[in-house]
Amino acid sequence: MLTSDSIVTTLRAAGCVFAEEEAELILSTAADAGEVQRMVTERVSGLPLEQVVGWASFHGVRVAIDPDVFVPRRRTEHLVDEAILRCRPNAVVVDLCCGSGALGLAVLTAVPGVELYAADLHPAAVRNARRNLPSAQVFEGDLYDALPTDLRGRIDILLANVPYVPTDDVQFLPAEARLHEPRLTLDGGPDGLALLRRVAAEALPWLAPGGHLFTEASAEQAPLAAEILTAAGLKTTISTDEDDFGTTVIGTT
View 1 (tube, helix red, strand yellow):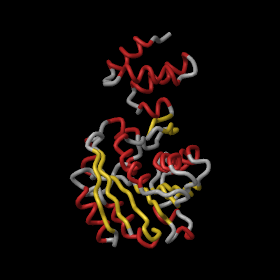
View 2 (tube, rainbow, N blue to C red):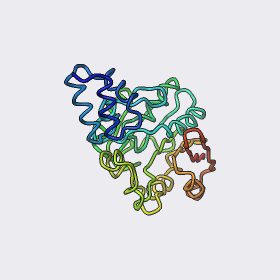
View 3 (cartoon, helix red, strand yellow):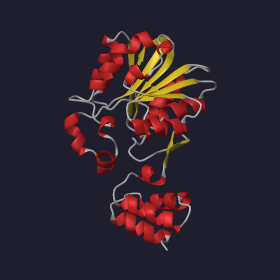
View 4 (cartoon, one colour):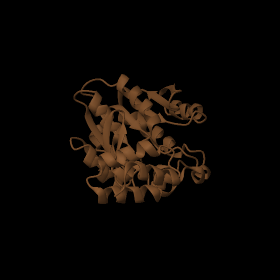
């Protein structure tokens, strides 16, 4: 039977920097010794911890994470903070490129009465998001094409955490992401902002008066991302969280 110490030793040998914390999480999540063994084996093989245990903690909420689905990053909590600051009760919120639905779930948990919709192109993500967002409508499709047309002009909060890693830089990502998360959730095109351009170009007709679009970028990309939103007719600001290295670009009608 695997003990906490033996798990820590095994994980540390596999290169897990936070082996003690990971061992504790595995032991507290697994239902029996067999599941402990499975989780340790999967983690040693390089599978992201969140996919191994089946959940992630994001913005104080426990989010179910399925295999082959993007794992929400701690830095993205800053985007959620900015959205919650501007989200009124009963607002219409859309989580575009939703992945597991973590961003929408965090806003839904924090703001009363939110009317939440979510969409993603990746079928595994859509299935995962439907597990996390049973009270929301979750659609499969390409950006706005997935949404009901009656949302046009009604969206108060548009969460668009689109991929923003430049294509040539994907190869330098940690193996956990590069090998176990869908490339379409990572690859943002030649400069990392290709999908953001598409989101920005069509945003204005979908946003309500005074509505906001929130997206994430690297610190280096943020000025160009802001220019893209400005060119699309939005008033733009950049907000940073130096503690978690999060950079959020906000466009307002």
